[in-house]
Amino acid sequence: MQGSELKRLVEVIDTLRSASGCPWYHEQTHVSLAPYVIEEAHELVEAIEAGDGPEMLGELGDVLLQVVLHSRLAQEDADAPFGLEDVARASADKLIERNPHVFGDATVADADEVRARYEAVKARTMSRASVLDGVPVALPALQRAQKVLGRAERAGVAHASVDGIGGELLALVARARAEGIDAEAALRDAVRAVEADVRGAESDVTRRSSRRT
Image 1 (cartoon, rainbow, N blue to C red):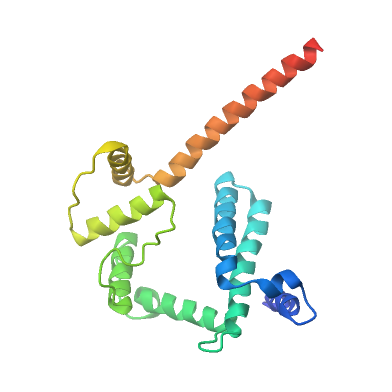
Image 2 (image 1 turned 45 degrees about the vertical axis):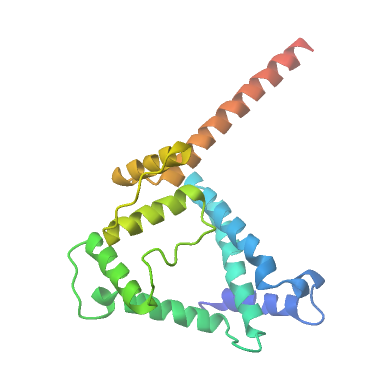
């Protein structure tokens, strides 16, 4: 039966949180678990960029664990409890609302129009005071810069130039956006290349040292 393994995961977490369960799980809160959400998301991105299917499977499971665990903790909230079913319902409702070209009578010409409609629906339904509302402060700096520049561009707002290295980095992010490049991913690729060179050089030194001995 489809969904039986998800049900089993929910039951496992319920057992871990029960009175006879695991002391570590008893101690956890939304706040204490927040760093794990970030860590697991980054590990999933690494697996995706490496094209490692088996690793992706495991990392997706770790991300799912965080969703289910936070939903389980939320059930215990005395003021505004909610559970996994509520999370799934909210997600499905949001997708239907933001894709009227699929679930309604609207028509779109291409993916660019889909994105524009998506942003318009978000702006209407989320009552944001600023186009920048909703950009997470905790995003990596390059990724956040991309988001802020994109939002400013859509709003037709010109930003002042920034001096120093920060301004130069911002200009590089703007250049990457103009060329359709994900600056964050590009930098990760570059860092991985450096890491490979360093590890290769270390291996060469180790091999030469082994020959001498």
